[in-house]
Length: 164
Image (cartoon, rainbow, N blue to C red; front, side):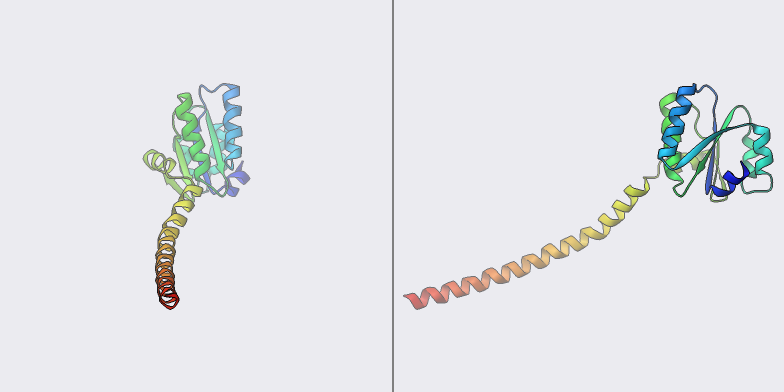
């Protein structure tokens, strides 16, 4: 368990009470798809594993049956899965989290779960940069088109005067 904690960039602690085996398996599958993994833990063993690590503040939240969600590179996707699953199944939200070495409050966890997904944020950034560039291209295209139409009108006018 200690190795998994050290390898994880972020860890979420959730209550496991009231979940059926099929619900727990469904949650595990969704977490794996999101780049995380979940482990049901004994509180006593987790206390030993987190001792002397950045995750030690989690010990204050260890009561009742708990599950630890380990996150890989993306810390938001597993949190979104946990928040969505909790809302859909009437489960309590994430009890505690240590994200990049910092203990988060329940309010911070809730706000973090509402942050748009990485792909959506990247799309918004690209859109913010692409919008003005596209406008510039259309403007320059309109200027060039106007020049071409004007030159063609002059050619047609001169060509029409020579024919008469």
